[in-house]
Image (tube, rainbow, N blue to C red; front, side, top):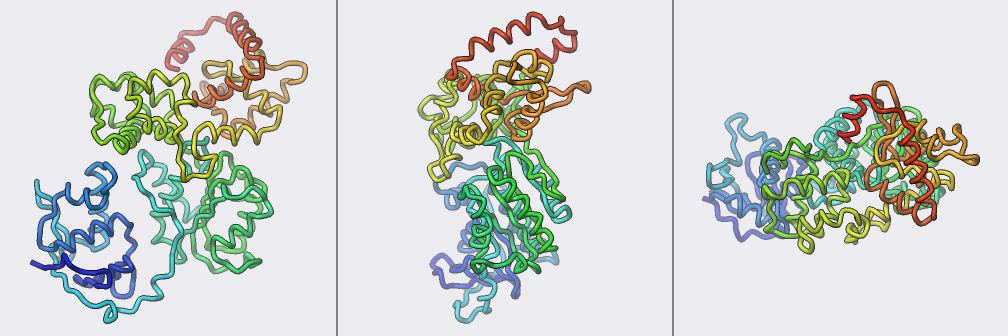
Length: 494
C-alpha cells in the first residue's frame, strides 16, 4: 500500500506511463497531455492519494463536490472518463477498480518524484481553451450535443438557435469541451453579449484570442480550432460578414454560433434547440417514471442544490409536471423556479405560476444583466423589435393555443396592419424565436411559449388595448366553423 496522503503541490506522481503534475493539474503520457476535466482530476487526486485503499462513493462525492448535492451517476461518468484516458483494462494494465458495495480503489503502483526532476512540459502549458468552468452537469441535451459534435468538424459552420432561456450557451460550451481533443489549436469562446457596437466585434475577437491589436484575419490562416461565437443575435449583420471572412481565411477553422435567430450566412447549418422534455399527463404513474424526463431532472437537481433534503414524492408528480409545463421546459425558467423551493415549496410554486415573472426574479448575479432573469432576457429581445413587430407580438398574445396566419389576420389586422405586412412580421418573429412554427396536415400554424405569451399579454394590457383584441378574438372563435373531430383532439392535446 502506498503512503501518499501527505504529498504537496510540487510533487509529480508516476503510475505506468503516466505522470500526474499536481501543481499544474496536468496528466501526461510521455510528452502528450491527457484531456481531463477538472472534476475528473479532482477524483483522480483523491484516489491516487489513497492508492491501495478503498474510497467510498460518498466520500469521493463529498470531497469533489463539497458544496453541491449530486447524483452518483455524475461520479460514474468521470470514473469512466478516467478509465478511457488510461485505457483501463487493456494489455493487463488496471488503474481504477470498482469494489462492489464499497467504492473505488486506485490499484496501480504509484511513485513520487520532485517536480524539478520530472519531464519538462512548459510548452504543454499553453492554454488550449478559454471555456468557463462548468459547476453542474448538462441535463437532457445528449442527443443535440452528440449531433453537433459529429457534424461540426465536417460542416465547419453551425448556428445553434432557440429562444431566450433555452440553454444555447450551455450546450455550445459542452460541445466545445467534447471537441477539445479534435482541434490542434483548441477551442475558444467569444462572448458577444459583452458588446453592443458592431464596430467592436473584430477587436473583441482578436482580444479574446490574444492576437495583436489590428491583426488581420489571415493570421488565423493555419489555425485548426473551434471558435464559439456566443450570443450573436444583436449583431447579426456584422457576425455574418465576419463568419464568411473567417471561413475563407482559415480553411481548418470550425465555427459554432449561438443566436436567437439564424445568421443567414453562406454555408450555415442551423440546429434548433428544443425545450427540455416535460412529462405527459399519462406519465405520472411513479416518481421513477417522471424522473425520466429532463425538465424534471433539472428541477430536482437545482432544488437539491438549494435544499439538500428535497425529494420528489408520489403526491408531488402532478405539481412538478404543471410547473415544468407552464415554464415551457426552459432551463433558465426551471432553474429560477427551483431556486425558490426553500421559500415556497412545490405547492407554493404551483400557485404562483400565473405570476411567473414575479416568481422568477432570483437571478444569476454573475451573468450579464440580460441573462440574469427570464424577464430581463425577454425585455432585451422585445426592445430590439421594430414598433410594428412589438404591436403584432402584443396582439397575437390573445391566442390561447396554436393559430394560423388566416386566424391572425382575422383578429389583429387593421387598416395600418395589412395582411401582407402581417405575414412578413410573423415570419420575422418566428425567425427570432418569439413564435414557434409547425406544420400540421400541410397547414402552417404558429404558437407561443407560455412565458413569451404571458410577457406579450402584459405589454398588451399596459397599452390599453387588451379588452379590444380579446373581444375580437372571442368574435373570431364564435364565427369559426365547427371543428372536426381531429381538430377537437388537437385542441384538447394543447
